Image (cartoon, rainbow, N blue to C red; front, side):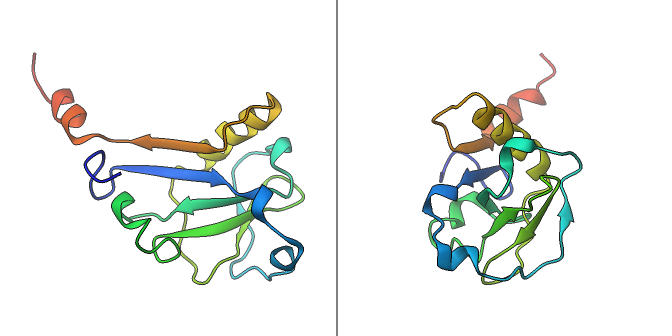
Length: 130
């Protein structure tokens, strides 16, 4: 990601459900249930890795759990819980990312990531008066 989006220049959320084993499913949450703001029926019991709020994209590979968190969607499909080493708050854009994942699963898409960046050159162009 280095060079595409610096500092808080984007977010990524990855559906990791296929890699979650029974031992991980037994882990307790380290956060309260947090409302998604909508019900997303295709995400029932899904797990995601999410970039943390105010964390740098370029630091994810160096320290994934220090810069993001693992969350699981609760059975009501309207909340999530953090299940990770530390309570790193997910990106504030998590509800929109999860809505994308819900859509992808509804369409049986093979895609498992929702990623957006704020490329610095494009951001600069949006401030050009021309």
